[in-house]
Image (cartoon, rainbow, N blue to C red):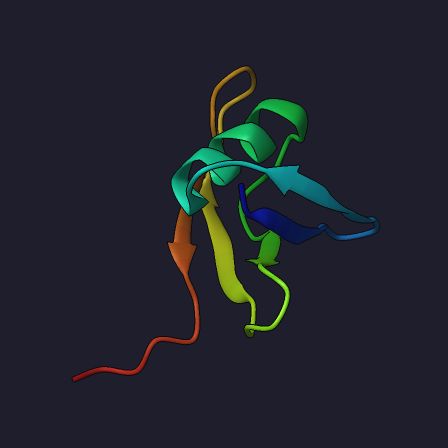
Length: 76
C-alpha cells in the first residue's frame, strides 16, 4: 500500500504527515477528514521517488470536505 507524504500550508501553519491508502483519491479523502482546509490553502502530496502534486483549496465549508484544484498544470 503506497505511503503518501503530504504538507498542508495555511496562512500561519504548516501541517505535514503520512497517509497510507490504495489511491491518491483515498489519501485526499483521509486528509480532508483529519484536517480543516480553507480557501487559498495549498497541499503538496506525493510518494517517495516522485515529485509531489500541488493542489489549492478552492472552497470549504465547516464540517464538509474541501474542494481542491490541481496547480501547476500547463494548457494544451
